[in-house]
Amino acid sequence: MKLATWNVNSLKVRLQQLVDWLAREKPDAICLQETKLEDGNFPAAELQAAGYRAAFAGQKTYNGVAIVSRAPLAEVGTGIPGFEDHQKRVIAATLDGVRVVCLYAPNGQAVGSEKYDYKLRWYGALRDWLAEELSRHPRLAVLGDLNVAPEDRDVHDPKLWEGQVHVSEPERTAFRALLALGLKDCFRLFEQPEKSFSWWDYRMGAFRRNAGLRIDHILLSPELAAGCSSCTIDKAPRKLERPSDHAPVTAELS
DNA sequence: ATGGCTACGATCCGTAGA
Image (cartoon, rainbow, N blue to C red):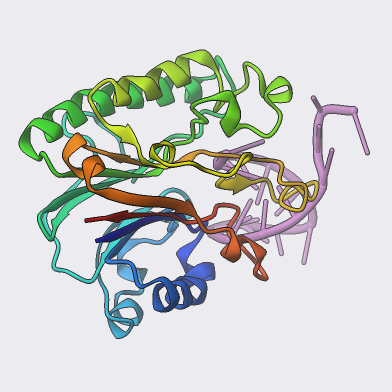
């Protein structure tokens, strides 16, 4: 099984790029973030024509998540149970016997801001919920834009970013709390090129300079991690005209 | 230099992203 995640930064703008990517990479499922579409405008017909069905939870302008899958999607749920949130950041579904959780973590804006507090609260609620999901679903895959660069090697210039949002110690601690549940950072199960990133700022020629962060992640339960054979970041879509600022991340499972 | 793009919904600028 091939699973992927991609923050498309507007599915309306990136639909053709997504359809092209699906045709080329043929994943079994892809988790999308920042669709920025109300559910009535979700391009279900276009994706169906490409051979995929979808579960989605969106809103205008901001946020919005979707799971796009070849197999039927069962037990679809949205949001973190018990965590009141009008922002559409979470959708989960079961496909081919795998529980897939698609996440768009809050950005956090600036350390100490109200949005930063919300990010840490969101992570706390996420941890508790994933602990339950893991006990219910031994085959659990958590994919998405988690908006945390877990280690300094996930940051192009750790000195420049030191203490900043996405890198601050409380955020990294919140991220590690997910790993403490037994989830594995799939990308680090394998030898990877140095300076591997999944996001590059649109400004300052950041992509050309490879001035990026690795903030898009695939976390796997122990059972799925044991059968994982690869995890890669595909930089090709970032080179296209009008790209998303994020690249897709893909994992192969047996 | 604290900016520099991009998307969006609103106008011809503000908010947000990361």
